[in-house]
Each structure stands twice: as structure tokens, then as C-alpha cells.
Length: 401
Image (cartoon, rainbow, N blue to C red; front, top):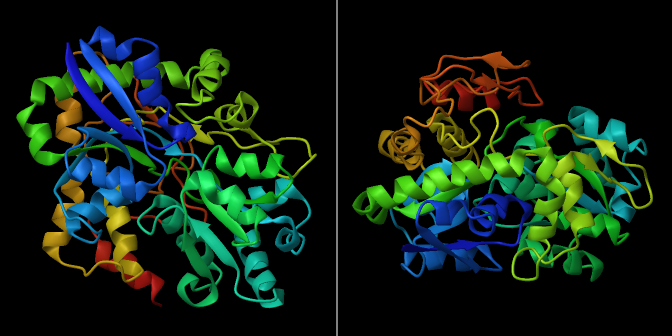
């Protein structure tokens, strides 16, 4: 049996790795999967870069940033599998949230109006709001910037962004060290259930089917262990299908609630899985379809256009210098070729292309694939923009007009 160590953070979107181990999908592929819990993304990054683990549940932008040499320890990383899309929630303390639309369903359902409300509330606040983010190079931070930028907010001028591990966000909010935070679930739900915060924005309403966590590996190790990688991806694909089945959500929440995994009660984990979020203490739940997805619509497929959207935002916000080489390196982190190799012959719906125009689908649509039955869900950005990976310069120029 092949032993593989994988690092993860205590988050709902670690579910696929946990299910692969606990439900036997890894063992079926003759893999002994050891899961190493980390509390911060910096620690997880270092464990992967320095070879303490072979794989990691990683922020998609962090994998790209490490490869581009933007993070502390440069290394060539590859992501042959996406572990989830969506799953982020932005909350603010109840005092700040009182200045926003009191109709929670409308607040969540209309991110354009809420972005403008948020901008107005900043002007009324006693100081620059301090917002917790889990890492500079995270989809959480990039989505927050994208959303607030629409309303004319410059996060580097109008806010203080403070990096904290997701599991410590609630304590920091309670202590008054931050005024709100954006993090992967269940930590926003935990803060709401504790009476500390209200939901302001849900990532799934800013970018439907937005990229989130990936399975990251050191590129050299991945290429030297092709047969092992293929078996691991087969196990993860089966685990992802199990996680996405509503019939398993109760059991999955129980698995994740164990102290060595997420360590929070099932009732804090289930809302994200079911898409019924409690947005304000004591309120009824709000329906947010596709709050998090693990498998359907070929979620696991690493679209190179997702990687290039991340690259575009790193350039937009001055975190990366644009160049043809950096653009190529960023796209190459997402290894759709490895995904295709591993799942070939399984009958899994497989996109026929590796890039697509992001934000163009407002309704589910059948697309060309190497097997029948692939339907992609809506992938709209809240502001109606589309991202064409063939015209990154034009896309970025539109933000400067």
C-alpha cells in the first residue's frame, strides 16, 4: 500500500480528502492517506514546499503565488484536481451590519446594492474597518477585492486587511481585534451562531462556481509518481461524488465535526452543505443554492482559465508584474492534462477544452466533452463581466476606465 501524507486546514472544503480516507476510497486504490491538520495557510504551504507532505488542500491563488515566486518560499507547484468551488462567506460584526439593509435575504441576494451599502457604511464608521482575511493570496481576499472594487472601494486605502487563520477569526471578532472577516465555512456560521456577526456577502453570489481549493503537489514529485497520482485522483473523484450527494450530508457533517478534522458541531457544518444559511442570530435560514460544490458539473476539473482569472486579479491589485512568462506559469499550475489522464476510461464527464470564457453562463448548459452528459452550471460574476483568457490585457484595461 502506498502511503501519502496530505496537509489540510479545518474547513468544510477539506471534505473530499477526509471522505477519501474515512469512507475507504483511498484504501480501494491501495493508498494509505495520512491527513495532517494545519492551522494556518503559511504552515501548510511550508509543509508542502519543504516535502513534509506530498499533497495539500490549498488555496488556489496560493499555489499560483508560490509558483510565481510571490510567496515566501518559491517552488513549482501543480494542481491536478480541484477540491471544491464556492464556500466562502463574508460576515461583519453586528454593530457594522446594522448600517446595511436589514432584509437579510435581499442583502445576500443583491450583491450590487450591498456593495454600495457597504461603501456608505464605511463613511459612517468610527475608523477604517479591520477585515480578517485568511491569506493575501486567497480566493477569499480576491473575491472581496473584486466585490468591493465595484462600489469604488479600494481595499488597500479604505480598509485594513489583517491575515488570520480561519479558525481564529471568531475569537478575534469577539475581542474587537477585527470588525468582520471572510473565510471558508464553517467559521462564518460559527460566528453567526455565537451572536457575534451577520452575513454580508456569500462568495457564491459574487462568482457562481468560483474556484476555491485545489489539491496541490510539488510538480517534480507529481511527475515522478504518475501512477500513484492517478490512483489518488481516482480516489478523490469518488470521494467528491460521495460528498456532493445530499443523502450523505448528515454523515459528512458528523465526519467533519471530529476533533482531528474541523472540530465544530455538525449543526455548524450542515448549513453550507445544504445551502440553507443562518445569516443573522435567531433568524430563519436563507436559501443560497450551490453554496459549495464538490463534484457535479465536473467541479474537480482544473480549468486553466480559472488559474488565469486568478493571475489577472494578482496583476490588477499590484501583487504580480504582468509578463507572458508569468501568465504561462500561472496557467500551467492547473494541470488538466493530469486530470484527464487519471480519469480516462472511468466514464467521468470530461470537458473537451482546458479553457473557457468565465462568467458567460447564466443558465445550465451542456458542453462538448469526451463523454456524454456534461452540463456546466451558471458561472456568472455579479457585475455581469466576462473573463476571456485570450484577452487578459483587455479585461484588465476595462477596470481602469
